[in-house]
Amino acid sequence: MLALLRGAGVPDRAAAIAGDLFGLYIGAYAFEESLGLVSPTGEDLPPHEVIAMLRSYYGSLPALQFPNTLAVLDEMFSGDADDRFEFAWTFSSAASPPRWSDSGEVE
View 1: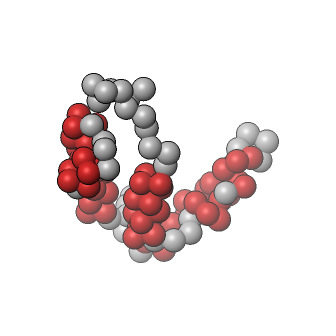
View 2: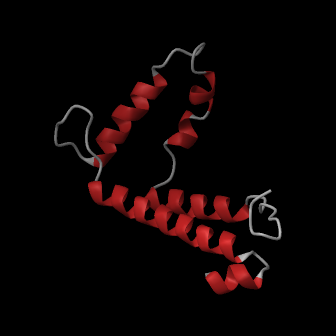
């Protein structure tokens, strides 16, 4: 990855920090996946029931206070963990690249 970033002209400091950021994201993702899906009630429920419970809760929020949450409710609960990982990876790599000064600081 460092070769890719440095080859694209990313200054060394920024390339090193970006590598750290990607590593942290992958580690956090793996850790969260290892926890499994725990029911808010403490019961031993299958994942689809926990997700239905959470979706129901968010769907019950008052529309005047949470219009954006309710507008994207279906999207919040669509896809699986792999879909979300792929989206996050694509999103972070497709974002506008920062501009760096000659010293490697983000402008």
